[in-house]
Image 1 (tube, rainbow, N blue to C red):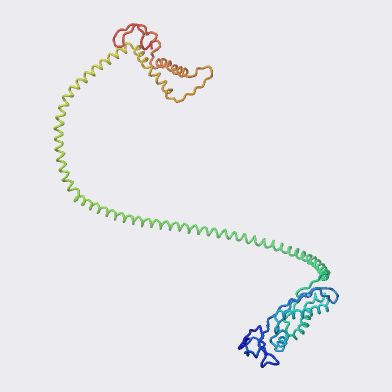
Image 2 (spheres, helix red, strand yellow):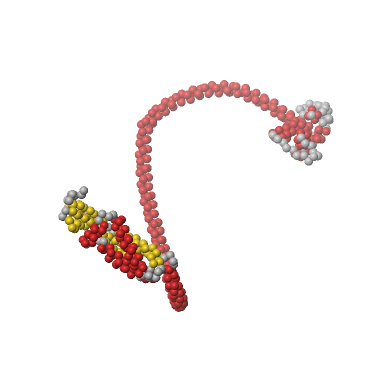
Length: 449
């Protein structure tokens, strides 16, 4: 049970009945009131706007054509006027908001059907404002008695299942399309004429404009060339002046740097001279004086050692002189004997020239053969190619070595004029020994070999 002070918002109303309000209840909109417990009753009624979707399917118009209409209505319980609020309390107090909406919806739908039956399809389709006004006025008169105000009503949609509305629009659509084509043709004609005239004027203006542009371009290029030449000249002068000034500045900087280096070098030289003087004094104090005393000591020791060595050398020289005289006599005797031998050998060679050369040739021939065969002895692998008629193998290699050796006498004859082959054939004749003795005509051991 509610008692005491109660409040409500602007979208609802308080209805107090009971003691003190026997014939007429108290209504309070958006305010507060005091309720006595047990002797008074408090109820609330909503003042919110309700949106109703009013549908009337297949309603026959005055012409007997069935159409369907959908309208949108905004309604609410009127709280500004006490009489209407009291009427709403009599009708809807204790009902839910949905129940109130259903009552208003059915009332509006009935009035909407009535208006549709009194008007033709063309009137409803073409003059929607009139239809909206008729429904609004008829429905408002009934809903006001219930305390409900119709705030607005709008025809949302009209359609039919028989194609009547489409047929109405086809004739008008054809007329509109015909008029549109005619108007478009006339507009195109006028447009083309005007475009041709405009194009003619445009071309004439374009030629004049192009001529003026060409003249202006020519004047611009001439003036620009003049200005560019002046600018380039000034720019070149400025660059030369800048380069000259930069060179002067660099030269000045170099001079300053050289001056700084000269001063630094002078300071370094001065410091080095002072350092040299300091080191000289340090050397004199730490090294020179001890070195002088050490030098004197070493000089005396060296003089004593030299004197000792001189004495020993003189003794050794005396001993060597005696021994050297004996060795010199022996060497002289040996040299005299070798000289006599060489003289005798030279005389023998002069007398027996061909025989001596033959003996030298025969003693040297094995060495020549060894040198010729030396490359073959060093080879790891020998590959020989034969044409089929020549020898292959060791006999081939031996034959080539012997062929080289047989060419030696011809080479000796060319170089010395001595025919070795002839000397060999005369080896059986008696000759005188190359060393002064007499020999018989026996075969030479070198020849037999």
